[in-house]
Amino acid sequence: MPYRLEVENLNVYFGESHILNDINININNNMVTSLIGPSGCGKSTFIRTINRMNDTIPTFKKDGTVLLDGKDIYDPKVDVVDLRKRVGMVFQKPNPFPKSIFDNVAYGLRIHGLNDKDIIANKVEESLKAAALWDEVKDKLEMSAMGLSGGQQQRLCIARTIAVEPEVILMDEPCSALDPISTTKIEDLIHKLKNDYTIIIVTHNMQQATRVSKYTAFFLHGEIVESGLTDKLFMDPTDKRTEDYITGRFG
Amino acid sequence: MNRIISPKNSQKIMKTIFWGSGIFTMFLLILVIGYILVNGLPVVNLNFIFGDPIDNGASGGIFPFIISTFYVTFVALVVATPLGVGGAVYLAEYAGENKLVKAIRFGSEILASIPSIVFGLFGFAFFVVYLNFGFSVLSGGLTLALMAMPTILRTAEVSIESVPKSYSEGSMALGASKWQTIYQVILPAAVPGIITGVILGMARAVEETAAILYTVGAALQAPVSIFDPARPLPLHLYTLATEGISMPNAYGTAAVLVILILIITIVTNTLVDRYTKKMMGR
Image (cartoon, rainbow over all chains, first blue to last red; front, top):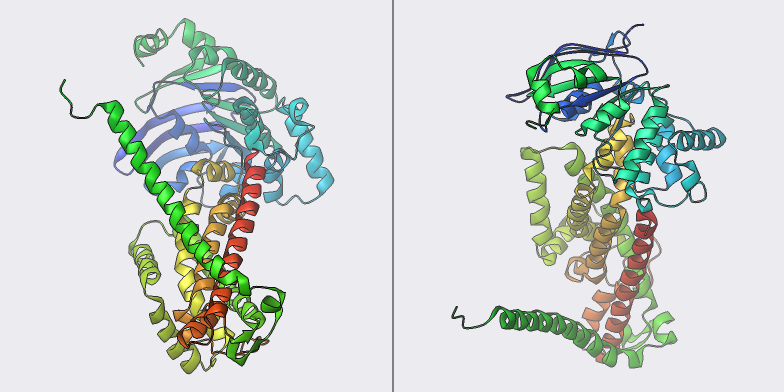
């Protein structure tokens, strides 16, 4: 099976500082890959390179290639709008728009030109169901999303992301602002979603990495120290630094 | 420890001072508004509000001047709001930090602090004479627009900048273009602040006298076309008082002006509150 994402010799700079150093990683289709590592090691920068969110930073520079389905996403011919439709993102802090629950999910559909009210309503329902939020909000779709709890807001953001039918979903520490019960719900959701989506999740929680992901990559100082099957990486790491990190000796 | 005043007492003293300042401000407001209402309300009745002036306003009503106020203010806002909000969007979202942006910001600060009589002279020289708009609603409205625009621009810029960055990131990550993000996420979230700016600009336009003194004329009839001369309430008030036509009617006009401003402020504040509550789900 071909890889969904292939990253080759990727270097990222913000001005003078070298943030990512020669990253090579292949991400499998319809599986969950965890990115672990101490704060400031470049995990977030890495996933923001995959949907080109770093483009908004004026000092951003990169070399190397990032291939999505075999095509270079930094090719000048690539439409960033189209790329971000295919590579969705869920942020660390839930960030619903100050609009109604319905409009939050419908937003992505509408900006991509969908106007038919019935189709939008169906998609919204479908997406909220897929994000395991429908039962909690079906009677108050017109209410502002800002009135939901943090965990519900994060599931709404996931619903909003899957509504536009991406292939890849990037999650940047999606549970770090949530309580344990909400975290469990999001993890259950990730298990459900992995059949249809390729998920890359940044996490500081190593138990979470072992619970949700098949593959794991360990980042340190802007490099990938080790990557591979999650079980292997946690049970039998090849690199001393990985072992030190996962046993809690630093980080 | 040998303190002159204990922390507990200094806390009490400072609290009293702050409380006093607050109460004093309220007191001044009530004093000014109260004075005007007490002196002005006795002449305010339906005839005064809806009647035409007789003998230059010595008796009769002020209806043409109320119409003038709304008309001139409307023209000012129709011009100043899009320019102010547009400029604010440019400064907050597109411009980044460069010399042009600093110049625009500096320019709008200077504009906001120029005395209104100077705007009046400029309006006379430029709109009335050079563009040949004459003494008219248009000349007055445009002059007021110049004055209101910097206020609207700065307030709108601050409120656009205070929209959390996470909103626009969420929108961009869904594939929205910059403009879609601005139009559908950032501006709706900034609306309460933008409206506050428009209200501040409008308050400046409604109450302004000096800037319209040389631009709007002094008609006693209600204006119909934008090229007609007009006489907004502050100008009428100024004429009544300085030419010694009628002090009671001057107070009456002032009372109507104050009440109008109060009504506009209260109504928009209520609407903005309701909008914010709906948006934020409280």
